[in-house]
Image 1 (cartoon, rainbow, N blue to C red):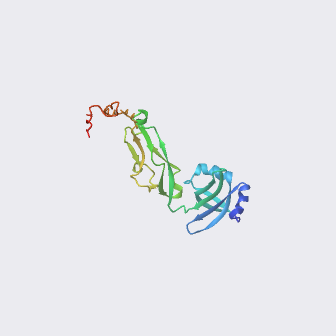
Image 2 (cartoon, helix red, strand yellow; image 1 turned 90 degrees about the vertical axis):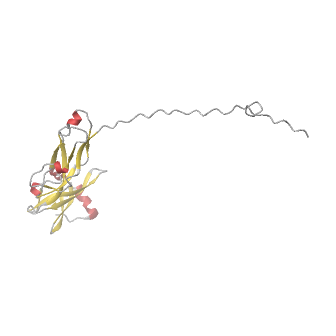
Image 3 (cartoon, rainbow, N blue to C red; image 1 turned 135 degrees about the horizontal axis):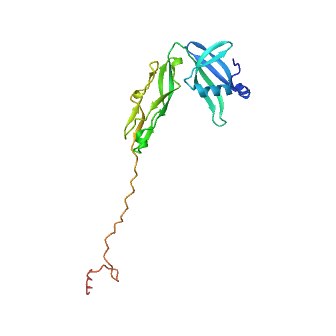
Amino acid sequence: MRTLVGKKVKSIRLDGKTPATIYGKEKENLSISVPTDTFLQLYKEAGKTGLIELIIGGNKHPVLVEAIQIDHIHNTLLNIEFHEVNLKEKVHATVSLEMVGEPTAITEKLGVLLTLIDQIEVEALPTDLPEKIEVDISGLAAVNDQITVGDIKVPDSVTILTDKDIMIAKISAFIVEKEPEPVVAEVAPETATATEEGKPEGTKEEPAKEE
């Protein structure tokens, strides 16, 4: 358990731990600290969908990692938020998509692969949440072939919440840039040639009138 709050938590980080909070439905929030190195190693395996069991004072708390705060300048972990779950109640979670296979259209150099989303929202019991969902893209064989959320296969214990019509990946045609056409300068018609007196040729001289 953690009693230090505010700016005082700096001493916790100096001690090799990270301040954290556990919250859950109809549960009182708990302020704790966890060993930083142990958490980072575990987070690499669990991510945000892997169930973690925290033991505090002999009591077990099944949690998911809701959010982490990182100091990107010093690349250090600042804070962790854990969401305590009921193992018998379904939860919503964001799951990463992993593209597997190589599209035929790419191997035959017919187009380029566009990946439009890399995660989806799902609902499942905490113990059934997948770490990731694989998407087989090897069947994309021609330009404009695509895979949507509705094409994903998941276990019956998992419900996809993201709109099934949203596109995940697509084969797009190569973009060919046309060379700019040469600009031909138009030559303006020649103006009438001036005579030595500064008058255009062909201009008749008016005779001087006698007084």
